[in-house]
Length: 195
Image (tube, rainbow, N blue to C red; front, side, top):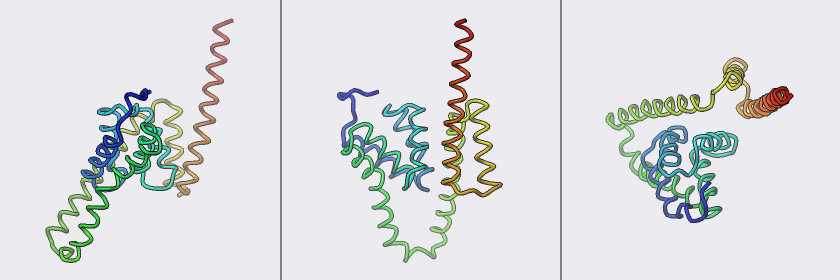
């Protein structure tokens, strides 16, 4: 945990998240590898476990996942001002780029090169999202219990077509129950060893 002297400056928060927002296309999931590199590896504002918790919590709260994660990180570092700086940083490039595209798109929308460029961007975004899924699964599916929860959630989504909100609630309940069961079994083993 950072002490007060090691906290990021408001400008650093804004600049870091603005640089992430400026170089990523495809929304929140495409930003996850860049967020992980900047937040965990480079600036050490969160651990691998904490960033997974931020991703999970961001999934459950309204809004774009990358914006939510930046808000959480900013708040952790500098409170409300940090949350505002990080959030403004992540959305600022998008506002500029979208405004520019909106102005220019009508005159270039039928251009074959623009169409091909967007096709390439879509493929690249799919690759970035797949990369995020693989990294998250390696850190999240760590034992038989987490694998079982993962399979249960996949079945709920793809076979029974349950609502995402309901699936998140199921994940929370199963996670809490499984951790309570594991804690009880650990306590029983400890008591048996003590005897």
